[in-house]
Length: 185
Image (tube, rainbow, N blue to C red):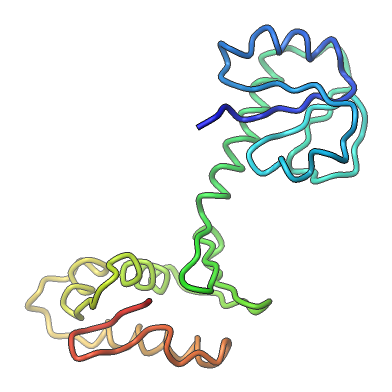
C-alpha cells in the first residue's frame, strides 16, 4: 500500500521541511498550486494550507499562525489520517445496503435504518458466515449463552430485524429463514 498523501497548498517553506522528512515519516508530501484538482484524491489524504479553503473541512489543516512546531503539524496530520482510516473501515456493503458500524445505521437508496448494537451483531455475524447460521450458533456466538439454554431471544431479535427491513426498505428477504437457520446473501 502506498504512503498517504499530504497536499501542501500555498506554503512553500513548510513543503520543503516536510518533504525532507517524508522518507522517515512514511508520508507522501505533494506541493500543489490548484486546490480544485485534488478533491477526488482526498479519501486517504489531507491538505495543509496557509490560507482558508472552502473544501471538505475534515481533510484540511490551516496553519496561518506562526510559529508552529513541526511536531504539532505531524500530530494533526496523523490525527486526520487515523480518523479517516477508522471512518472508512467502519463502513461496508451487505448486498445493496451500506452498514456504518460507528453509527449503527444501515442505508439504501436514501433510506436509513437505525439498528441496535445487538442487531448489528446479528446481521454482521450471519452475513460473514456466508452460510446458514443456526439459532444455537447465534446463542453461543452472539449472546454467549450455553448451548443447552432454552430461550426465544434469537428468534425475537431476528423477527424484529426482519420487520424493520420490511417497514423501512420494503425488503422481506434481507434475512432469510431456512430449515437450517438464517442466511443473508
